[in-house]
Length: 197
Ligand SMILES: CC(C)(COP(=O)(O)OP(=O)(O)OC[C@H]1O[C@@H](n2cnc3c(N)ncnc32)[C@H](O)[C@@H]1OP(=O)(O)O)[C@@H](O)C(=O)NCCC(=O)NCCS
Image (cartoon, rainbow, N blue to C red; front, side, top):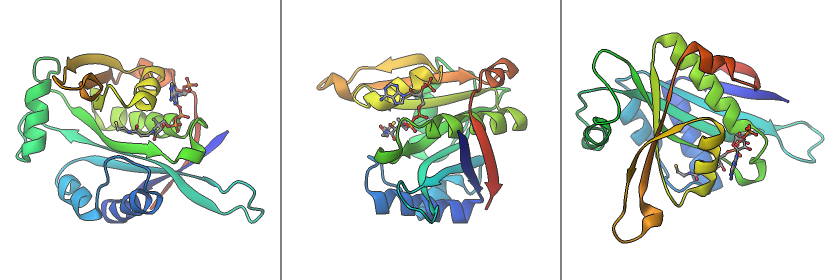
């Protein structure tokens, strides 16, 4: 299957993600376009969205079905949430002298899950990241996000840290990462067509 991917510039990308998050209302962490632009405007980032046909629609109309936003994570951050993230990762990720990427937000609409859209976006982001010089990509999830944990397992992310939640273990945080070597790119399996917006 050929996956149709759009790579967005910051402003149209932020608006498109606000749209998919608000309109489809399925994703747990809703972000506004303003939040997305505030976080990404001064750092290297990538906004990808996959499109697919509406089932049973003879006109072949395509709609956004999956998205992924990744951004640079620096040793020294000013946003308190990112400062906190870097502090939590310091014992398991080396920031000095290398480029680290953070998978911030992403998901696939329920009716389109299991068709490889998220793999395609992840693989496209890894090609981009390797090309621009990132050495490692990190992601944070929670025990209770079973779909995401299963998916990250299939995409060969390694657990690098576990932070227990003292009240409900399903809210415990799990940090995972992947080293972005050329070998990783050779494991890719998706077929993608990318257009730029
Ligand atoms: C997790 C999520 C993004 C997966 O998207 P998707 O488009 O269905 O994923 P893909 O079809 O590309 O699957 C990628 C790989 O993960 C596997 N996978 C997908 N869902 C899975 C699940 N629930 N359990 C185990 N493995 C799963 C697929 O089999 C595939 O592996 P393969 O290519 O080796 O066969 C989607 O289920 C989702 O949006 N979930 C809600 C978002 C969420 O939980 N966010 C929490 C915040 S971190």
